[in-house]
Image 1 (spheres, rainbow, N blue to C red):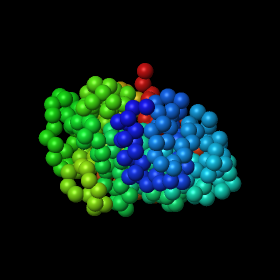
Image 2 (cartoon, one colour):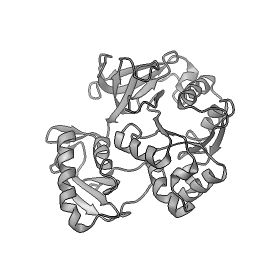
Image 3 (cartoon, rainbow, N blue to C red):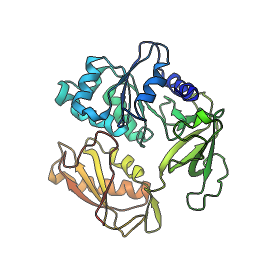
Image 4 (cartoon, one colour):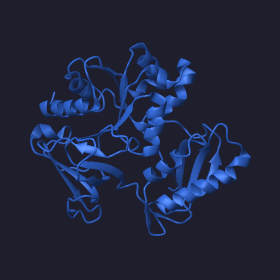
Length: 331
């Protein structure tokens, strides 16, 4: 059962506030493999914590009904699935997702919990605290302003930043950015990567100063993925940054969108093409003004001026796992 993994997940659970009486819904894909059974063992070692390994394979209807039936009061899943459950709960359960009584959302496997607009939407809908976890051994704090994830494994794993192109080391100092690499200091500390120096291909930015929450450990936040970065007129653009901007316009948009690529990335011939779902109560006459505002915000934050194609609500597919932000039209 990997004693080091049990210890590290225990640290995450402690920071997340998993106390006796916690009923944790575990809702990831591969629920019978790396994202399920091992975590059942690790979290079950926390005193008084019950783990409900539901998994995404059963579909959103059974996920919601299981959470209600077993009175789950915490959930660990992807930000995109947590967002999708907001839409489905009234339809499936006849009540808003906030009525389930979820107090802690421990979200990982993709960016989202660290994006202020997404975090705010989830906390308002569920009535619980949203914490970011993963991309290494880290967990965010509940400070009102997202501070990044606190690294919790200095005694078990070496954390480094390297240049994503040259793989040369990046000086570890406040504000540094680079490809995150992890080297286990003992066999059991690697979880699924024993003895290996590995990277999950995530670009991190670190903060080394004291955190306002008072807890220890340097922090890191995910800027984007090394294989997702796009270049538009020489400007580096990450899909997660675009996601943060668009989510800020909910409920005038649903929050679901796609970046349409007609040729292989990272180079994109401008303008960057976006498909965006309008909100339920937004009419055709409202779209020109809304588009102008979104383009202005994307220009200010991401330094890109996209061409937007509007879609009706629910036009884009909803995935039970990670949301695909890119639509490939090449090959």
